[in-house]
Every structure is written in structure tokens, then in C-alpha cells.
Image 1: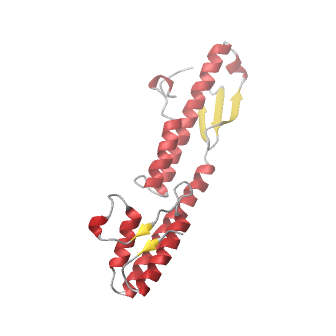
Image 2: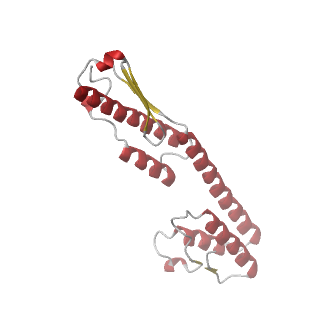
Image 3: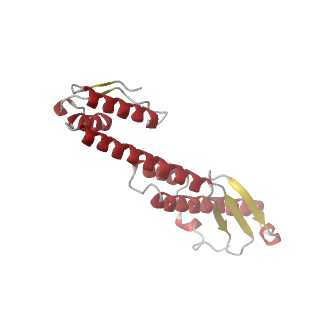
Length: 191
């Protein structure tokens, strides 16, 4: 549990202890909750959000107001966690698809971007191995870019594009699956 120290009454200390427990429970595993201290505002390190939140709690004189603030804060954390779980569920169900202009080659990638299916008809086999390989690789990149676009929409609908969670998910997908170059886009290249 996070260590919290305050210079306030016992009732506020109890609320701060609950807040520290909630912070520990909701801290991402890769970043354990740090020690939390209520100190004067000028002593706070810049960007120390948890300390600032606990400082706000300690500054509340009325126990009812402190409990209300804490309930609101916990509800916000729970709501964000629910939206994140929903985003994860939606992304896990996504696939990306691409098809050659003549329909002779189709690909589907799963939510990880890995190839799940490749469809070739006889017309696709009427080319050289090198051309076929290039066409398949291009279609896989298009399907991955299609997947990334769908993830962007799911982020927008659930956690929001401007949230820390949303930005992290988008960065992960757009870094791994960037939009294909213009000469590989489906509407620019005839096969």
C-alpha cells in the first residue's frame, strides 16, 4: 500500500488511507504506486498528479466534502477502467481486410495484425512468384492499416482520442501498422 502522511485530523487521515488503497489497487502493474505525502502546495514536485490529488483531499476541511470528493474520484477511476476493458474487448474482436482490384487475392489480419487468412484464386496464380509475393505483402500492409483505422474508431468511441490510454493504444497500432505508401493504396494500384 502507498505510504501517506498528512498533518490533518484522524477523519481526513482515514479518507487519505482509503485513497492510497484505491491508488494502489488501480496503479498499472508496470508502474507501482509511489509513496504519497500531503505537503504544502509549494513543496510539490511538478507533474506529481497523485500527490496533488491527495493534497486536494487533505485541504478539504469538511469530512462530508472529503468523502464526496473521494467517491467522485473513485467513480472516475472505475468508469475509466470500464471503458478501457470495453476497448480491449472491442479491439480483440477486430480484423483487417484487403482485396486486390481484380478480387483474385484476399487477406485478413487479426487484432494483432498477424495474417489469419489468405485467399488466392486461379487468376492470382497466373503471375510470377515475385509479383504474387509483392501483391500479397502489399495487401497485408493494407489490411493492417485498415485494422489500425478501426482501432482508432474504437478508441474514439470508448476511452477517447485525447486520453492517455487512447493515445497509447493509437501509438501502438499506428507505429506497427502505418498507412501504406500512396503507390500501395488500393485505389491507386491496378493489378
